[in-house]
Length: 415
Ligand code: ADP
Image (cartoon, rainbow, N blue to C red; front, side):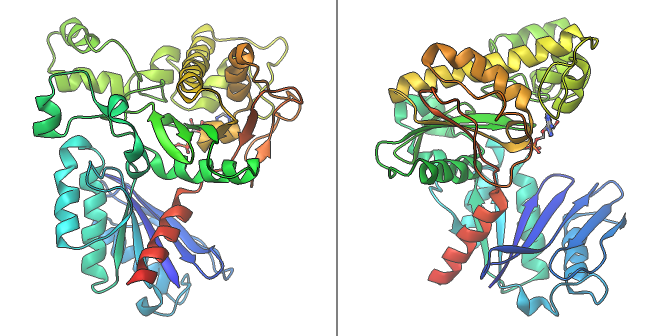
């Protein structure tokens, strides 16, 4: 069975075609700058055909899907002979509200329910829907499945997900903490449970998905019981351009300081100009910021005699401090921890951040082995804990696309 996985953003669309008999990628690619001008990079993986990497007109997501299909089936760049070899499509959908606890076969009703979640994630859900609708048009009759970022966190207890604001906003508008990156937290926590090898019941894992967007989850008995992102993906640890948790009254302060700009624009400052970028003034990309702070990004070690940009160093200090602070609170609410997992772009690739976080955790007996930590980009689970660490420290590469393909296969199998 071949499953096409689609991750549609507002101006981009990533795809991977999986052969699910071996869980291998047949082809992958990225449509970029949709609605601006357009660019497509298509990589056939399974058959050694050339990579297509070129500007191409992509006025809307519909043209993007058509271009992807054309490449997947073309003589020169193709990996399948025709569309009948694509058996199902799995879509990443950022928000499923309180309705979806798991992945769902998309029909009229499901599509309406997804649309109803748009006000809760206005940047993401409309883009996800454009991806779904474009696929429905281009491949009518091919089953489509939605896999929700929020679903894994549906097990949060009410006292964790309820915002302490007037209750009517929850009852009338569904305002509550939902959590995000659930597909990633679910995937890496399951691998950590496998690694620990003592079964799911009783295990306590803290997963740290650290990328451009970052969130942590407390996973007890295989279930998410707390996470750092909340109503929107702005809450929690600082990120590439997002502030994470700050005093909410800052919205009014920022508005006033900028000539009474509308609330929406003040929140834009917290979403787009803050975090590591805002403090360092250099970049939202951790590689640039670490380099400016005098760090060798391959080993995570400070380069002797290097110039250190003080605000780059401060931005990294704040990031590590906040991640450690949340780990500490998750440790407390779970009554301990068996493994801390680092994943996603920064978690998998930054020995400096892993070391900075774990340094603060020494008070609860968690330590990594500095030599084992000096690597980036693992293919599988790597244990970087020291001999005496009270919990395992693991680096596990995430694979959200594979989870989406697996869920899709499972649901199709039930049809
Ligand atoms: P997204 O949230 O967009 O999926 P990713 O998980 O791909 O993001 O993470 C992107 C981040 O990973 C960028 O900030 C990038 O700098 C960081 N990163 C990649 N390689 C390294 C490295 N060697 N050292 C530090 N950060 C890295």
